[in-house]
Image (cartoon, rainbow, N blue to C red):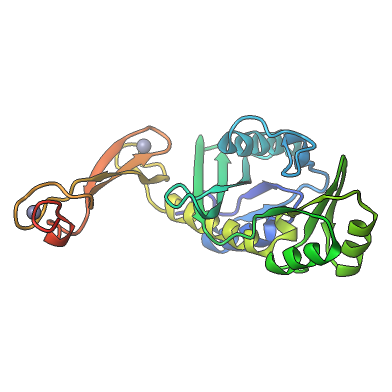
Length: 271
Ligand SMILES: [Zn+2]
Ligand SMILES: [Zn+2]
C-alpha cells in the first residue's frame, strides 16, 4: 500500500512515544514520523489529575492529532492515548487499553489501532513508612518504572531512585499516596503496549474495505452461537466476526473457520 509512501506524519507526543510508534510505521509504510519540539499534550489531560481528562479516550487522541495538524500545517498525524481500568472480561485484573489513532486529511481517513493488555504495573497505595513505600516500589518494577508521590496537594512525578523516594516519604505527612508513573517514557511496560496497538493499526491499515476500498476494514464485534455438532443448538462459541469499515461504516459478517461446536460446549449434550 503506498497511500503513505514518502509522506511525513506528525506524532502528537511529549512522552517519547515515538520510540514505540515510529520504527513500526516507518518500516511498514515508508513514511517519516516527526515529533514537534514544543507540543504540550498535558493540555489534553494528565494521569496525575492536575488537569482532568475530558471526553473519552478516542476523543482525546482525536483532539491531540488535530491539534498537531494545526500546529505543524501537515496533513497527516498520529496520536495515542492510554487508559487503565479493570479488564472488561476479568474485572479482578487491571488492564491497559492503548489506542493509536491516525488522521490523514488527504485521503479523509481516521483509523484506530487498539490493544487491551493485562501486562501493566498500574497500581497505587497509601503508605506510612519508607519500608512500605520500598515494598510497593519493588512490586511495580521500580526504578525502571518510575513513581509518583502525592503528599496532600504536592505532586512529585518521575521519581527514579530509592534515595529520592526515601527523602520524599520521610518529609511527607503520613499517610502519603504513591502511584505508578504511567507516562510512556517512564513506563517500559506501557511502551510495549503502545507498540502492540501500533501493530494493530498496521494490520487495520493493510486491510481495505470491499465497499469503499479505503484501509481500516477490521473486526468490530463478534457474534456468538456456533451450533453444537450433535444437536445443533447454539453454543457460546463464536459463530462469526463482524467486520466494519472505519470510514464508510460498511459491515460484513465473516464466519469463523469452525462450522460446528464440540458438544462439550453444548449446554444440552454436555451440561
Ligand atoms: Zn468502506
Ligand atoms: Zn448439543
